[in-house]
Amino acid sequence: MAIREILEVPDPRLKIVSEPVADSEFNDELKQLVEDMFETMYDAPGIGLAAIQVGVPKRVLVIDLQPEDPDADPIECEHDGHKHTHPATKKEPRTFINPVIVDPADELSTYQEGCLSVPEIYADVDRPATCTVRYQDLDGKSHEENLEGLLATCLQHEMDHLEGILFIDHLSRLKRNMALKKLKKLRQAA
Ligand code: NI
Image (cartoon, rainbow, N blue to C red; front, side):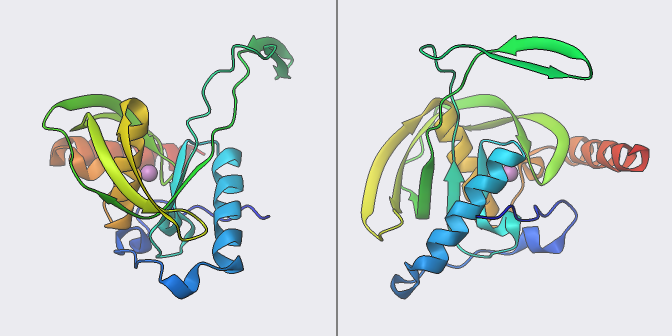
């Protein structure tokens, strides 16, 4: 396993349209890519990652919403000489290869989105509230699943990456420019 570098705006590779994974490509290299994507996402930390975000233009997504785990003890941690506890979370890793959305709902829902390729920027985005996704797993087996809530939104956000689209591309030009300006300032300050 290895943590890979996450591409950030304005890297032109984030605009590439990713290629489908061919039948002959369901191999060890694909498994390694997915393992590395999970490790990179957990380390960031984030809840979703598309392969192009680590520079691989293939239609591969990983998602883990990492929900709170009510059965586990809260985690105590200490940083900057400062102790606190937070709820434990559990891992629910999901891999989507060659995903296709078949019937997005007319009804929209709004979530405040962020993206590992657009660090420190958050904005509300409207997307279909539910959708059905067809995808393949790591063994190449096909599945169809109805998604709702944060998982539906996250999948649609990640699928946009496969088309070279970022969540800030859903904002008005004014809001997008403001977000990019803010990011530039944050980078200069760092
Ligand atoms: Ni993203």
